[in-house]
Image 1 (cartoon, rainbow, N blue to C red):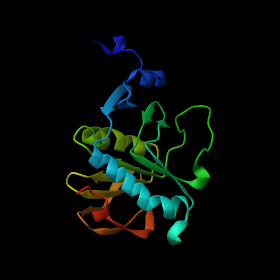
Image 2 (cartoon, rainbow, N blue to C red; image 1 turned 135 degrees about the horizontal axis):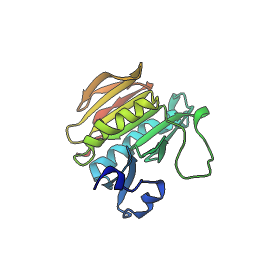
Image 3 (tube, rainbow, N blue to C red; image 1 turned 45 degrees about the horizontal axis):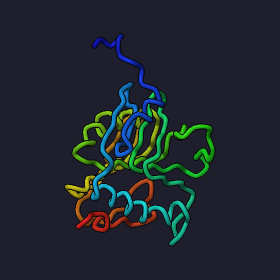
Image 4 (tube, rainbow, N blue to C red; image 1 turned 90 degrees about the vertical axis):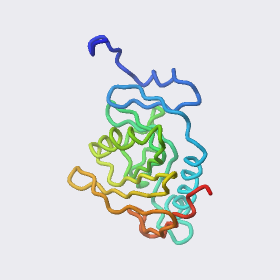
Length: 187
């Protein structure tokens, strides 16, 4: 099939994928991936547990001022991406919109890598996040038990550090708390 014969992918095409899949529109292509594995889901839950109280709610001495969401649909121009987690400074988060997706790029994204998503997360989604000025990105691999921290500088991702196993990290953009990576892994 030639490019001219390809049907343009639109948001409504996401309704055609099975319920047990996550759908995204990336660079004009409909991408459907299986729902996360249990290791993947446990990491999402535990990162949310560590960040939510101090950053979303200001509990435990945290600064508050953030809205942190699991698996939000976010519009990045023609792309609809679903990061595993995303966070917005509270003043930037659109509380109500006339559609399901969020139209404002987040300040932070977190992708939990898996064998079925690692290539798309790294090679396709990270450049889109940079193009739309997401300032911070975390890539967490629950299989090899690592956290990679990135900051956007002059339109390019700068690797701030790679941490493994049970390292304790003060990770941008959440430096006020110490994140114990050992708590994230399903043992």
